[in-house]
Image 1 (cartoon, rainbow, N blue to C red):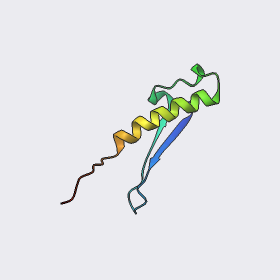
Image 2: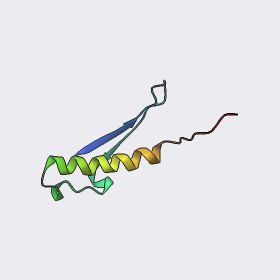
Image 3: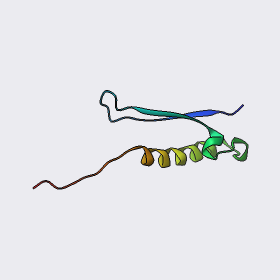
Image 4: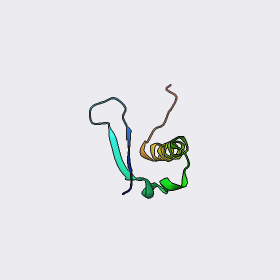
Length: 64
């Protein structure tokens, strides 16, 4: 059975939370390939960083 991980992001406003749950394999992470929990957590963290930047739309601009 594959372990699952849930990614979550929110701006703090009502209705702004986004969550998605994935099997590790769906993220390209094969748990048995990691010798320690820390190595696995690093791989999941990298997948999360990729997910979050794909999940948010942000910008900045100058005001006159």
